[in-house]
Length: 146
Picture 1 (cartoon, rainbow, N blue to C red):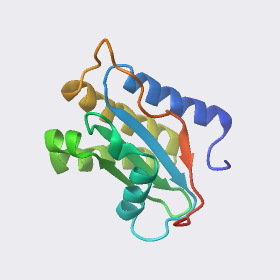
Picture 2: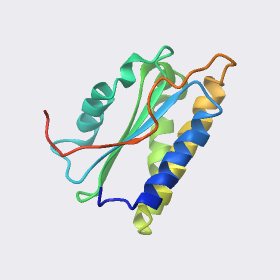
Picture 3: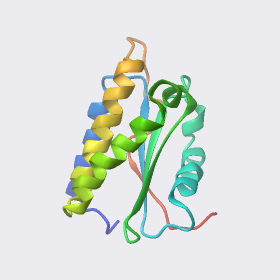
């Protein structure tokens, strides 16, 4: 996908793997060039499409970004949202936006993933029998509602 080079994709996926190595939570990234509608609504579409609402502890976090439109949203399932509240999501968005405004989208995503992972670790520490419920790859979309 042209939004990110293979190296950048590797850095983002590595950040997800590191974050998830300390928690039973799941983190995904969904990327589109253009956002069809409201970013939070698009995030909700991908959240469901990627099966993030089906994790055992309801502790999935999705970062959605529309690269050409410069829009993004973060959505967490009920298990994590009940623990951290709305302020955490705004704090994470602010951290990411700081890097985005400096033209470093990849570092912004990595920092957002790291920050979400720290909270997931705090409330949902990794257990000995933990399994990776969802893939760590980046979900690239085409901006359609299919």
